[in-house]
Length: 242
Image (cartoon, rainbow, N blue to C red; front, side, top):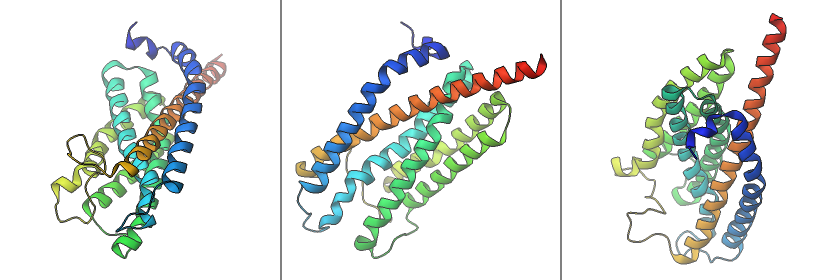
């Protein structure tokens, strides 16, 4: 079975219809277990106190905010190279979900930063690049809405996505590029010898899994909606010409 078979809208909808119930239920279970475990059954940190528990929302949402844009980048490149409409519509569908993840990350970061740094916001390299990424999300969504022709909108938003990817990567690796920033290093990393303590680590992994599955389920659902909306616009156009 070829991956490109799912560029067929009918094939995509049939497949995702089968997957969505399982994804949705698993996402809800992971989120419930991870957040309840993290917020109610883990101890306070000896330095940060109960504020440390914000990581169960902040880290997964920040992770998904960045990776949602990277997923949009891949989908946009597929559109540019292969002209598969499902990929362009999937990128469009992911943008509002990624923007919401960015809002959650910014808000929870501010809630954590106020007691830890003594301020709600600082122009730290990572925070600044993250805010710019959010503005790119808003611009991407607005550009899709402003252009009537879907193919033209897909072309222009794909270019915007390529440019915005710089800030998606900066928001991930800014701590490595600018050592003077206040933001701490990554809580989870494959190249680190130590992550957060196991008592926080395992519920955090469950929360991340919940956010990932929720993102996938929402993107599938929104992509189906975009495909059906595109069909409806095409039928309306044919009726006007008839």
